[in-house]
Image 1 (cartoon, helix red, strand yellow):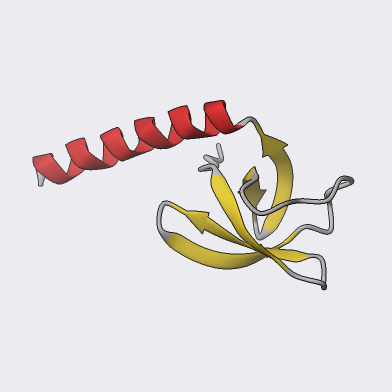
Image 2 (cartoon, one colour):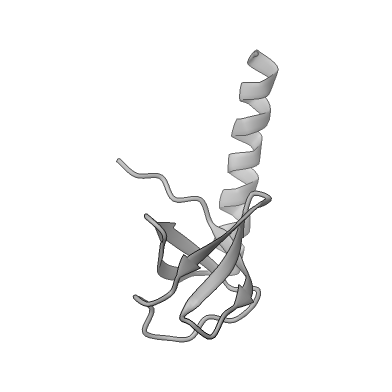
Length: 78
């Protein structure tokens, strides 16, 4: 099973790649599989270095809030 954390596009590059922010970690990934152009601020799901699809901002923010809650609880248990 694969778990994909929503990422937000922070830069769009001319070579069909984008830079995304995933919970504070920035990385450059391919957008070659996307049929529509991505814009700064879009939320996407990534799998093995490729943007797989764009997702709704409200859904992305809800998911990110839940992931942060999980991380906080795990940190409290340590």
